[in-house]
Length: 151
Image 1 (cartoon, helix red, strand yellow):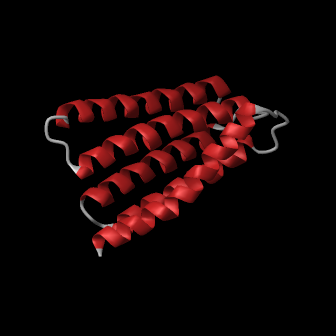
Image 2: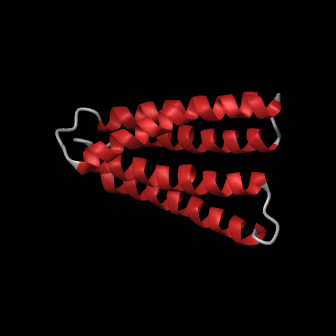
């Protein structure tokens, strides 16, 4: 798959998450709850901004175009993982949040492998590494919080 095509898919989905987050925020603004505020933040930051950064960064850093199989794996693991985290959080099922977290970790491994070995240096590579690192560190924190809230 061409790098630009994969990049467009991740950016388009990321933008969709941001718009959905904004719509939910607007719809619940008169009576926000802790869960809806969390949902909006999650959709915008993880589903949206992180997905855009991962797709864009991989596209610009990868020496070769990713295979269709890799892109489908990244898309499914990242987005189904996020769906599981959101669903598990709302129905208070920590095992579902755990499964979603595991899927997101898998997607991060795929994204990392897609950009590893890049000869590019500078701000983009630095930012990509920081994005992946922040996501990797935040997953166990989020999983622990899901278990505390369910307990």
